[in-house]
Image (cartoon, rainbow, N blue to C red; front, side):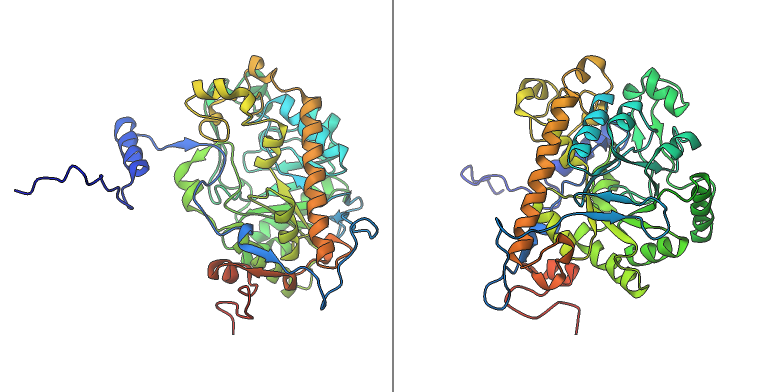
Length: 440
């Protein structure tokens, strides 16, 4: 019999590591799948795998202190009487009242309005706090129809039909019962304290022809004034974008799998969808083949964190981006100021675990009135506005370095990739070569 060598440390399995073992044990004990919020934690090819080719001799850079680099964008001017004119191409993604506190929705509206961009309602309806503080408010029209009514549709500045979300394409979301207060339940016409699931598909259509009818119906309800967005989770992006445009969308929103969510099964978050980096070129190709690239605008979301991410998404062909998780962090989520409270939750500042349970000490992803008091919507809005300004200035800096006088003038030619995977997904050359894997 062989005696183990006490000097040899135990070797962890790559397949059955401690995290996998813990999940198997948890599932065996409880008999239920794991539900959590936020987004994918696995490492994926992302914007960090791309680099800009700054100007030198063959290109002429712009002087940052003397030459302008514009940032404005118009969304929805294909059919709508009143398209959105935004000062910056960075918008706030849909996050529901229910998943977020009323104070958080107000803060998002304040911050977005201060820098001249839009915010989005999310599943659960429109709140007076958000409408009152949002200069440009996009109303999400979701399969659940929670809080949906024609009055609020007409109050909105644009309508976003949600067909899918990057964290859970093909699946509906969940709002846990402990966050279903009397107000949230009233807005959704559902009982208090009971877990609420959103449907995975709209109840009144089954395909793109029905979507076209629904878009026409929404245009008639709003007197053809509002731009109509169609949002898809990044999966079969090329075909989904083509069908959305054919159905009449003014704007297409593509959400990559790095996008967050209020709560859903972990198996969805980690194993469904494709990375944002892989989705953008597919969407752009579809728009170009239909002859509507830039006429039908493309908004990209899912893991946008910095001005570099913004600039790279736009260089690949996006007209604008949307941020969700980053916006909540800017408001004050995961702040070391609440380190003690995070520790009591079994978490720590900088980690996203079970905040979907409504115990967020920062007062952002909660419906607990005492916790919600920890967020000052005025101060939170100011932090968000500062963050959006920094993103914009960073993107401008990179665009000027490439010789571009407007962010929308960035192009794939300005980019190279660091890895074979990123090169193939983004369809830009591997750095130092003219080779794009998979292309002749």
